[in-house]
Image (cartoon, rainbow, N blue to C red):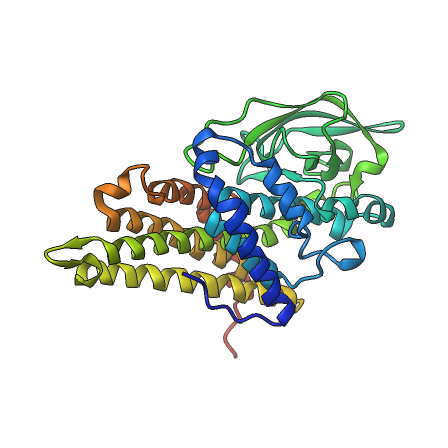
Length: 387
């Protein structure tokens, strides 16, 4: 069912209407087949790019859409309601553009950013390693200085769009900057020694390719360093706050679709002479699902509006990611329950939604990490009692 949204401008309302039109025409008809075939939908991203949907939160002067984050996230949610893999890809692309948008040199912003946010290119974000997921500081892939730039060696793991992306925002240890020094680099797959491993065989989101990236003595030009040397950790963590909001929006869109499927089925399916939606056991379940979806949506919008207002939003982003992804897991599981045996078959999308929801609790920082982040914020912000 259509989501009743409060949008700040008529332009934003038109943008959401355009998003729904494109999503219904280009995403929804392909999602189940592409996921079943584990097929990466590069042409769908080109369509979204041509429509201006791959650069919405970035400034108009660099080719972006100049939209508030709260509007951009609702676009992501609408895409996720039709196809979570594609919506996740939009969020990852935004994450990949953010280092240059926020920390790049004037030349990088002028020469690289317009094409990145303009829709013709697709980005990836290379932060994790096989042994360094939540513990980012333990990464081993490194870049060492040379006379004319850097040489990169090592392997990055769990890279969304790995092997398909046109550029990779990549974080590497830079030993010259101290034992914990990490720097950010703008890498492209045409660099010698850059390669993608075989895609991971995943439980869900199989239309979104995930693979390791191998760096075998990759020569990196000096102008590919993003931000100050050794300051990559701050760049990465700052971008992840925004990325967690993207995952929150994807989770809400997925949960909304699961709720819609469950409601339609419950209205049409009869048991004991009436639709199962009229039985209290099912109607209460649907009510709890609806409450979870709307609560999660409100939570990510609160965080996004803080970001738009220039206020700190790290704690709120972690809360949104925790609430939204836990809600998606519960709502999709309950949708399978409402459909009963039918929900366990591939004749209905509920089982796919349930598989896709699981990873939402894991990437962009596991929900256990989000609880740690929230707890640390609370204790650091605590005001000692007077006297």
